[in-house]
Amino acid sequence: MGGPKGEFDADFVTPGSPRAKRKTRHAKKMERFGGDVGGPRFEHVALRAAVTLRAHVFPTEERARVEAAVRALFPDVEFGGGGSDGELVGRAERLERIAEVIRSSRIRDTAREVLRDAVRPEGVIRVELNKQAAAAGHVNFALPGGEVLGTLAVELRADRPEALVEELTWIEGESDERLFGMKIRAAARRSPRGGPRRHGR
Image 1 (cartoon, rainbow, N blue to C red):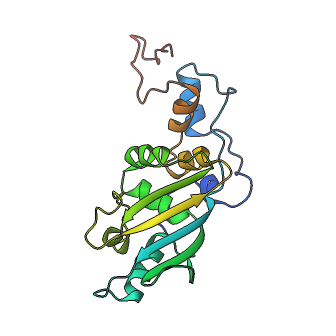
Image 2: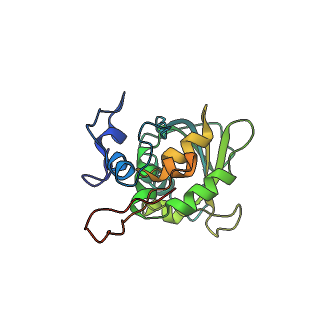
């Protein structure tokens, strides 16, 4: 993946089965504060979907620049026909880059809320992104028709869209807490003897 070195844990980006760890940060926190390490955990899903991308190319724009804006977030996009006159249509599958941008720009909470609201009953996620922000490699959710230079319409089709939303905005431990109610504290209060004081969940 083309993001900064160390942006994700190795088990997050390595294809196939997650790499076994002797003890993750999450497990250490759960042990420290009395959590049930053997309890349910967030189940990772692949950062893959059937992605359809649409953007209108205005007369004042260069098609190549609009294509570059799409590639900034979806590097594996392939452009083809199927759109109306002046519309750019692309297909993609890999979502590592957009997940990387969501994480590095610290908009996970906002992205999670928007993406959850965008899940449709048929298993499709539909959102629109600011086209200019995409050109700069940023994710900025837009209201339909609310951008002067138009938007990049994104449609994601996945077997488990809710799990995909969590994966796109995942951070170790937090997904477990949201999905399973495990309370993990960032810091412990110290007892008079200097040992960690355990807290109830």
